[in-house]
Image 1 (tube, rainbow, N blue to C red):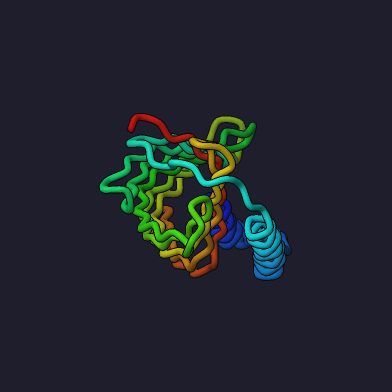
Image 2: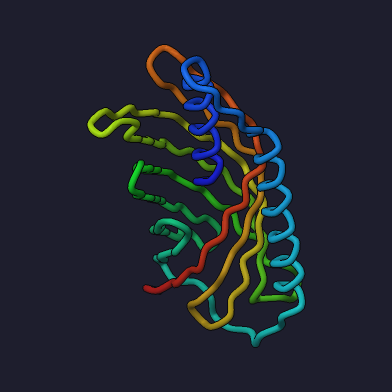
Length: 198
């Protein structure tokens, strides 16, 4: 999701800068290449999760924390099958800062006779802000919204530790000054999770 926001922001900035500079970048090809790579990672992880079989365990805690690139999520589990996650992602670089705040909802379903592998579906909404320095002292800021649905897998490796992957279509709207742009892409999310507090 974070990568999708950065790609959308890059397209807006390049479109605004093309009037003043001769910049030739094939962003559509770059987006397609990134999507192919992310889909290959998802398929690899999906196959890996299905091949591993660990002992049955008690998996539900009341709270959880998830680590993802480049951020963290805080989870609350409601009635064992509903998870709400507040997600924060922040990526500072020398030229720019990107921040994303999101809320995710998961509905969990255990695979038949398997208490360590679950599939889930969910929805996510997020706000992002991107600030870039284009001269030594000048800044510009892009704000936007992401909305997506996804389907994923979560695999428990220990009683309280799991890893999950989800993939789904997302739409994003970014705005800078009087210009705005909408994009639609498939996004892969991955995180490592720890649950506690029965």
